[in-house]
Length: 201
Image (tube, rainbow, N blue to C red):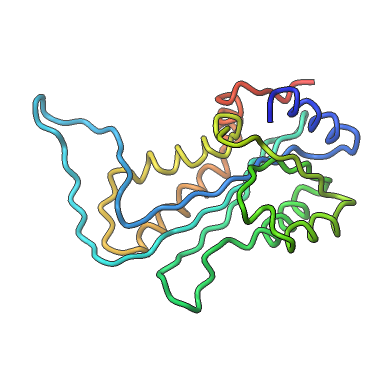
């Protein structure tokens, strides 16, 4: 979505007194992400990973904006350890319904064209809830226009030097950081500012 597309979404939201909601997902495995740190000159700091095992922590998030209202952020975190009985994806419908109830207003959802967003059950869900849900798709390869990407950067920066012993430790760290961000609307606003987009009237 270009800035003009956001303007169209904003007009739609304003017409129905709704929220512009950006969606994205991310994941974290047992391998720590790269992060900046202090070290002695000429000596590269090394974080040794103590834990063993596989698996992945899946994260889904919604950053929500409405002129005149405090910015909000909702998230869902799920562990996936590779077992057949475990679902790989996030329950998007539950997350969207929860956001709709707590925001108490219509949602203009902005997300990318990930395959799971285009499947028939998701299309049917959108059609069935057209009274409060309108969807705009970002163009391919445009993470710079999605403020939720900024949220993931804040999370991964904080866990970059975490030498987790197991997947549960990563999950707890991710949940803790997301909860902190959830209570910091200034950080949520900063992620929008980082895209160059604005919710000003």
